[in-house]
Amino acid sequence: MKLSVMQENLARGLQVVSRAVPTRSTLPVLNNVLLRTEDGGLKLTATNLEIGMTYWVPGKIEVGGTTTAPARLLTDIVAGLPANERVDLELQAQETLYIHAGRFETRVKGIDAEEFPAIPTAGEKPTTRIAQNVLRKALTEVTFAAATDEARPILTGVLARFEGTQLTLAAADNYRIAVKTITLLDPVEETSIVIPAHSLDALGRVLSETDDPVSVVLSPSRNQILFHVEGIDLVSRLIDGQFPNYQQVLPKSHTTTATVDRDQLLKAVRLAGLIAFSSANIVKLHIGKEAATGLTVSAAADIGDNHSEVEAQVEGDGTTIAFNAKYLVDVLANVPAEQFSIELNGPLSPGVFRPVDDADYVHIVMPVKTTS
Image (cartoon, rainbow, N blue to C red; front, top):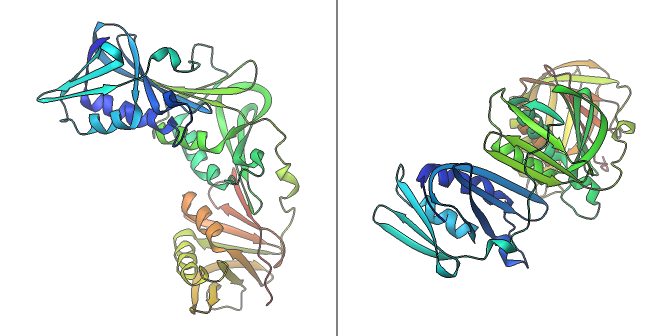
């Protein structure tokens, strides 16, 4: 193998695929990135056996070939080379990768590419397509709500329900639910799968703010899903199991509604959270027309207390409800809306948070029971 690529292209590709490199692995080759000459360039691949990422780097090939090299070491080396410089790569004896750029030369020991696991590619006809900016926004608004505790593996994933020209994404842990519906570019038959949330996090980082489509390929065996944008493939295993029926938890009615400015409420909750951090992270929302501004956010602990007023348009009964500050910050920080509508049905029922300008998103937060 012998070829030349530009430093910035190689650096970008290594940065992308390195997201699939495991932090720890008992299989040494998984700590490496696969380098393969293909289609007039260099194809980079990394995997942790759950997610695989492939990135194509344009280049000039003199001799085709393939090898693997330590992913993080190679990424750091290339990042340290001069920008806008040509990088020459050559596979030498004993799986040694020679890297040359300007006055810099490095040799890195690799592992035979035959030991690297096979990764599916986007060779099949897409199941459907989605505008990149639409999918990227939806992933930002949903994936953070997935559970991180492996005690219930199904909740570490995001439910993806395809139906006609719509895709509904839902994520939940024991304390919150996020649901977002977006439009598909190609109609599909009804099907539901569960995708690991961290796979979708990695996908969100490579999608751009354009309406160019990302192709979605669901494997015939329904155990893998592949996303393809120009030059990049991401393939992920699916989680086997039945996702909970989150619709049963969605409140059917409410007695109180408060419409608030997102930035004001987010600032108030963050300030209250500084006090609440030392006391189970509990903050209280006091909502009522009799209040001067309509809504107050408060927290109290041994270290002190906090009280903030937020302008709100209130309809219905007044109420006081307690939440974990982290869950409120998460939804307010990740969902870019000017205003939120908060729907409540007393202090013990779930709180419903809806962006005023987005009827296709809903977020449920379970309340915290307090002694007062």
